[in-house]
Length: 387
Image 1 (cartoon, rainbow, N blue to C red):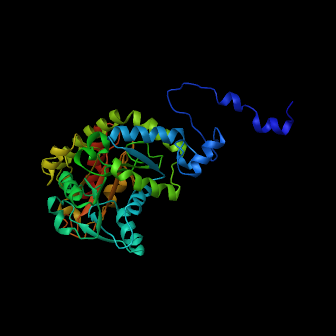
Image 2 (image 1 turned 180 degrees about the horizontal axis):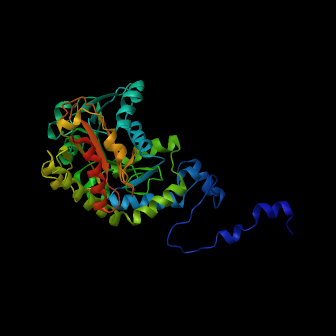
Image 3 (image 1 turned 60 degrees about the horizontal axis):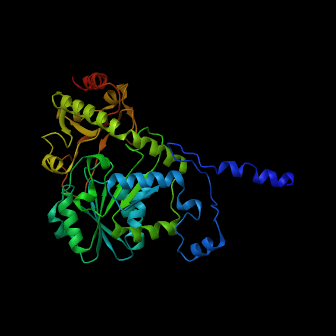
């Protein structure tokens, strides 16, 4: 007969371990993971254990999400992180060391740029910024110490597209790690591994989860690049919240349906904006007017719900608050990929030639609202800029 203190500790354990076959994976909350036997613990201490030894190794929901992402991307393995920038930072740390040089496309996500110049630089890793539409001429930027090339195609603010297969080919020939932030297209509309890329990053915060309530990132790699990355992740004990992975896996199930709606609505709004008298340029890769439209047609299977536009000269040099603040359906906020439409606005700087120098770039995340209602909202807002 067990005493009360023992019953408090052990009660329900046997019943909890029953094999229940649910559609979704179980949600574990655990630090300690019990070994089946002493021999397994000894294997783990030797680095030879194949199972899960601790909560940071990844539990059921994380493992299921990572496996689903790897399958979707055609990758060797995938690892989930607490946010998109965590995923980016781990990639940049895993593949570089003191004295290395990295090349970063000029249109990358702002925190990616800041991590390279503000953190990696402190540890003797130098970074140069490439033209945002770089292609096979990347060879002239490579140095003997170049270790990694980081692409974002299209960039998530100004939407320039790189010639990804050409860059990946040069990188492979030179032994340089090729990395792409593929958040805009998701694995549904661009498969980097089919184009020869080594490492694919997703901010799963965006379209994967789809509801603007989860922070999550993923990194998927080829078999050749996995061991080095896995070692770095193990040193940092990198892992993602089980609850967030569970929700991301749930979001993944509806990605195909949601992304198609985002795509169609965004194209409708983009075409409508091209004819608006307050608008100068609409920056959307799927439009024929986009400078790298032919690359988009060649490499991508579709477009997502994020694009940008600039205003005509008459509307540029004025306070845009009347326009933005009057919008009812577009929230003013960062991030994108969720069900609610959003807007951001501001002037951006680049190290290389920039077609929109001095222009305010308004970026739209087209959500799941009715597209005619979105156009009406933009129409009443833009009308406030026209004298």
